[in-house]
Image (cartoon, rainbow, N blue to C red; front, side, top):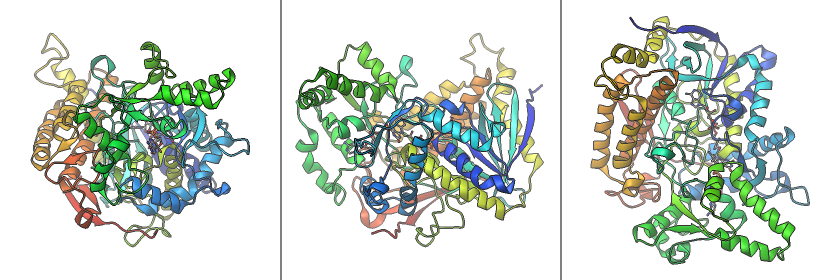
Length: 624
Ligand code: SFD
Ligand code: AMP
């Protein structure tokens, strides 16, 4: 006999899936427009939003801030910067739209109590041209509190994992519901909504992480961002873009500490084992990647590319010369003990505020950063749309800034009616970071309310709900049916537990999808074989088993990663060039091809047949 969960029904106008930076921004803004119209805005998150998502631990900088009131930068400046870093391909209407609004979000964070580093003239202290420094350990609770207050505590559903979208009964190009399950009680919640905003973050764990065994889960990007945004979008039939544009970044080794503050604020240099600065010794290698390789700043993927070439030539390890940088700063501070203590405190706070594992590594390995350099490494790839990469849904831009064909009625609406996307979930506009993701949530929230006002006639299909609930609980029933057919629960011929399944995805992606195990190299035949194996894995994953609610969560995270990973493989296969060396390489198309491939790659998976279609979409911009 199969196990059936309790079912709760929730009805609202706007449903926000994921209460991270984008989700909290969406909640705050949507509430402002919904309140006087009597519309209900709900937010659902798999965790507790005070400490959920990528900003759970906090952050030490806000990486997107124009400083327009001080005349520091214009939105157009930012678009040109992103164009260069992304090697030519961005939805510049989306980037521009964020840049013109982002400062107002940052000012609200300060109003709500987030402490900023300030200069004597009252300006925010700059880390680099676009980044400002914060004491950001409590960044997320501050932002979450504002979201809670805006929509009301009764409308926040926490510890509910959203697993499936359902489309309108009469119009399969329109979203009508999402179904989630509680990770605390044996209960499924069916959310009926007129508009849904996909804010579930990016996808980690798709590629095999460098840390294995005891360190599994210690990665740079949030381990609980498991591809749910992309799965929600793909399963709704939304067009996806740039799913091949996975992010690889240089990080402090093993603790995954970010490098921005060290490079930009502390002017720290990195050197290889021979003491060489590879940006100098290998500068000539950038020429073949013109026009981007020969312009400044050097794009993030090309910085990786130089490091990777150096590693392959056996000139590693590479080090962040924290010792040289700090000693230089101590001299500049005339060895004043008070100033030295302040500099050291900033150095440690950078990690204690956002990646405390790096501070643990320093402490546990007896590393005093003022005396010893730290190793650097390139990460495994992450799928995300908010750092120097741009995976996500293909979304409508704002009417005034969007070139022809890039606007279809509502800002940040995907190609599925009523389904919006923000943050990592919205593609082709990188460099949003925390503040831009929040701002994009606000833009999507406002547009979603407008959509609800204009569209009131969504209808539903009860049959689909019953089937979906059964499907969500299937791993429990697989386990229940076969649990006694083994003496060890981890090994059973009839099922596969989620951790084993995770290892399988990571093996396929590392070996066939250009993972670190192959120096990020792949080609057509390798990708095709990867897709065959992924297809076989999809069949095996029908037998995923859950022993408890925790396992059930992990099973659905696996499914979300499967959809994300498959999209990534298909996009890499379709793009017949190497646009972002240092992120991944096509061995059969090893060069940048501006003539044929300065285009977006978009895909759509038919929700009924499971067939994928890919296409080239022309690049267009209104900004010079
Ligand atoms: O320097 C479901 N980021 C940084 N941004 C900055 O502005 N400054 C920095 O200093 C940054 N650095 C940094 C950053 C991230 C990390 C992990 C580190 C360091 C260590 C990047 C930003 O954090 C990032 O760009 C934004 O947070 C992205 O926002 P968003 O909303 O797209 O993702 P989210 O905040 O992770 O939220 C996702 C939410 O979805 C929930 N969720 N809920 C229900 N059902 C499901 N199935 C769900 N799946 C996920 C999550 O729980 C979460 O709440 S630096 O290194 O770059
Ligand atoms: P990170 O700490 O690497 O996530 O980077 C934080 C911010 O600094 C992002 O805006 C990066 O693009 C930027 N950044 C990091 N390293 C460099 C570098 N070497 N040159 C220019 N910008 C950088």
